Image 1 (tube, rainbow, N blue to C red):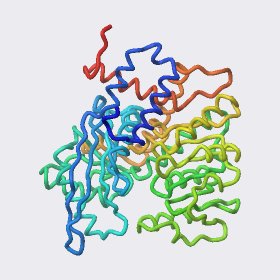
Image 2: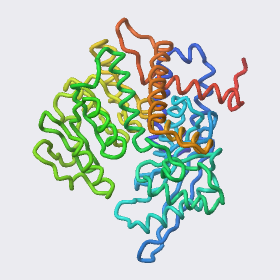
Image 3: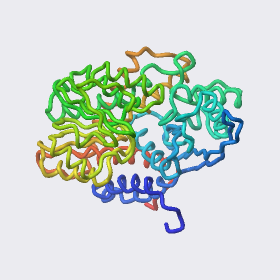
Image 4: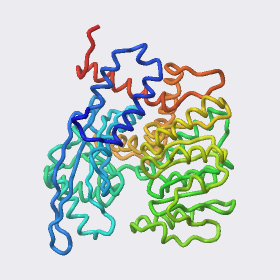
Amino acid sequence: MSNLPSEPEFEQAYKELAYTLENSSLFQKHPEYRTALTVASIPERVIQFRVVWEDDNGNVQVNRGYRVQFNSALGPYKGGLRLHPSVNLSILKFLGFEQIFKNALTGLSMGGGKGGADFDPKGKSDAEIRRFCCAFMAELHKHIGADTDVPAGDIGVGGREIGYMFGAYRKAANRFEGVLTGKGLSWGGSLIRPEATGYGLVYYVGHMLEYSGAGSYAGKRVALSGSGNVAQYAALKLIELGATVVSLSDSKGALVATGESGITVEDINAIMAIKEARQSLTTFQHAGHVKWIEGARPWLHVGKVDIALPCATQNEVSKEEAEGLLAAGCKFVAEGSNMGCTLEAIEVFENNRKEKKGEAVWYAPGKAANCGGVAVSGLEMAQNSQRLNWTQAEVDEKLKDIMKNAFFNGLNTAKTYVEAAEGELPSLVAGSNIAGFVKVAQAMHDQGDWWSKN
C-alpha cells in the first residue's frame, strides 16, 4: 500500500491480529475468512474536521478533530474520544480496530469506532475546555446518535468533558438521547462506569488465576502502570481482594513500593485527587514506604512480582521489560491499556508459555482483559434505552458475568483453533483475537459486507 502514508500504530494492531489468525487453524478450516479480514481492516467511514475555538485571551485556536467509524456489523459504532496532542489518524485507527473485536467479546450489540482531537487539556482553564468541547461537538453531532455512533470518554475526556459535549449535542440536535456514555448519574449515567475497566481487569485476571491453579489474589504482588481511572480502580479492587500493589506511574516516572505493605488505599485516594487536579505524580507526597523513580516505567524496578498489569497507554512494555518481568517471577500479564505490550514483548510471553507449560507466564490482550469499560458503557446504553437505572450491585454482577464470558470465550476458542502441547496453557491472545474476529466476520457476511463464491 505504498500510496498510503505510514500508520505504524494501526499497522501494529493489524499485524498482531493477522499473525494470530495465520498461526491458528482458522484459515485452513475457513479460507474465506481471509477476504473478511481484508474488508474488515478498512474503516467504513473516517470523518476529519477542524475545530476552531477561542482561548481566554480571545485568540483563535484550531485543532484537528476525528471520528473513525470502523465497523457497525454488530451494532452502533462504540468507542472513546481521546483529547491528547499525540492524537492522529494512525492511533485512532489502531484504537478503533481493536475496539471492534473488544466490543464483540463483551457479547453486547456494539460496533467499533474511535475519535478525538490533537487538543491538549493540560494547562487549559475550565472555560477553554468548555469552548473547545462545544466547538468539537458542533461538527461531530452531525455524525453520531444513539442508534448510529455512541462515543465515550478516553484519555483527556472525563466526566466534565462528557458533560460539556452532551450539553452541546442536546442543543444542536434538539434531542435528549443516550448519545454519549460516561454521563453524570443524574442525567443518564450508569453506576460503576468509572470503575468498570479497572474492576473488569481484576475480575478477568481472577479467572486466569483460578483456571491455572494459582489460587486467589491473597498475598500476590501486583505491578501496575498508569495512575488514571483504570489503574486507580484496579488497584483499589486488588487491595480489597488481598493483593499487594507495588507500583503506579505516569508520563513523568514511576512510584514503586519499598516496604512490604505496598501502595495503600490512602495513597491511591491522594493520587486520585492529584489526577483530578490534572497534576503529575511528582506532586505526590510519598512517605518512606514508596519511592519516586524519575522518567522510568515500573517494570524493571518492582523486584519480585506475581502479576503485571499495564494500564497507561500503548507499547508500554518492551521486549527487555518483558524479559525483566519473567526474571522477577511474573506469572500473569494482562493489559488494562490498549496494546500495552509491543509485538516483541508479546512474543517473549507467548514463547515462554509454550516452553514452560504450566510453569509459564500467561498473557491476556487488552481487547479481552480491559473490555469491562466498554461493557458497562453498553449497559449504560441499555439503561438509557429503557429509561431505567440499575443498582450498583446489578451492574457489578453483569460486569462479572461479561468478564467471565470474555475469558472463557477466548480460552475455548484457543482450544478449538490453536495447537497446544500437553500441559500448555491456551493462548488467550490468539483465542480472543479469533473469537472476536469470527463473530464480526460472520455478521458482516450475513449482512452482505463480504461474500465467497462457494
